[in-house]
Image (cartoon, rainbow, N blue to C red; front, side, top):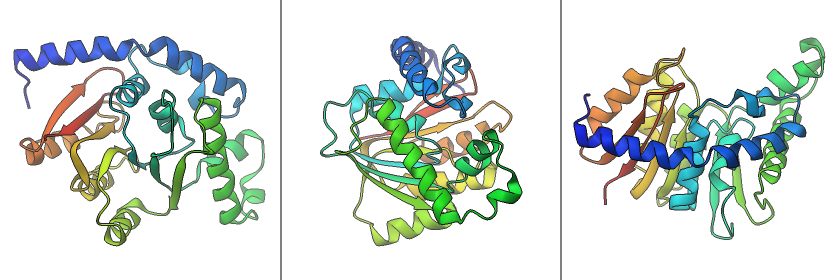
Length: 248
């Protein structure tokens, strides 16, 4: 879907605003990295020149969303970027969905714990370790977790996100991040499972558009379906990322 000249100008202005987050996010990443040398995701030297984490930080500062859903929380980096500038978390509620495998796939591996030994650690313990790591990383990123209402969910997002909304159909989201399974079928399914629960003025974030996952076709199809319902902002730099705001 081609952009017109005015849309290109709007994107350029947004990029300039978002780039103002560079120094602050770099500083925060350094703090987490100093306490997290077994998770290279937080290495500040791995930040791209125009990184999606700057965009998320800017969205948090600009819109201060309170009802937040993440598919693919991983170790808490994106969530921390969103929340680090809040003055208070009393009204913030987070619904965090993940398979909670990062502790096993990365941390145990980096600590040279063999996969054979890892198999003897019950999943419930590994899940709890992964979730505690999220909370710890959020604190490193200046988020007051004692004030934060965060709810963790495990399992396949294609099933448990619809199940969640079946039980909580009244919840309308200020912000949703879709960053779970990166095959095209799962990414599309995750988008479709959250889109109708984003409130007017709410934000939907999607990334990895033009890297090895090449999810741009998924995002473009999504835009065709919902072009009348959302304003879209795409950034075809780095790995490619985007956000959309539901029209009032």
